Length: 214
Picture 1 (cartoon, rainbow, N blue to C red):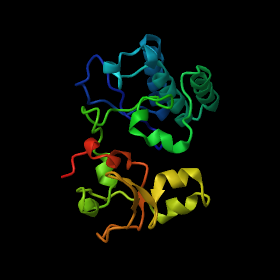
Picture 2 (tube, helix red, strand yellow):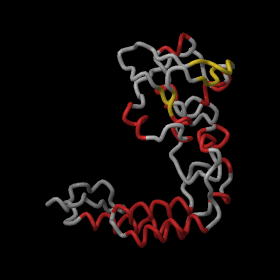
Picture 3 (cartoon, one colour):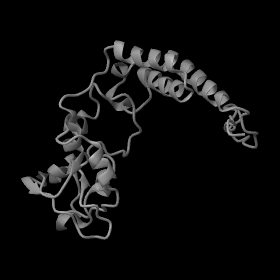
């Protein structure tokens, strides 16, 4: 059945996993929404968390996941309702300019709703930027460079679009790299190149104190 869902585990007996699939995926959405509905009644708002608790779930995060579940369930009225509740709470807002969202100092900004922490180290953070940086990092950092933007992605933006300029580097573009303010992006010939690199993950490489240059 194309509409069959996945098994719904009993949270009281999580090791009992030999369960049948839900007859219809709508059962899964209903269950997810029910769980988040219960959670949001008990969770604090993000501003009520102590900084040591940042990264934990909070009330508007539950609202956002309910909105997403309703969207997948094609209940657009309820998806709009919970999305509007987030907006109307005045607890979140988009950062301007767009590029600000990728700054390390804005990890817990007004645009933040919820994310899983990538590292227990609050300074170095996730290893993901190293995967985006060119292989061998122009001899200054051992980047991996396997995840690169495609030409199709680049072309999907309008020419000069703010989001494209903040997201993707192309040959000749400059950015700040280990203290060099106008470091020119030159693609590495490593067999994986698309002649582009993601720019939005480069903030940690501005200062050697933020990364280990091994």
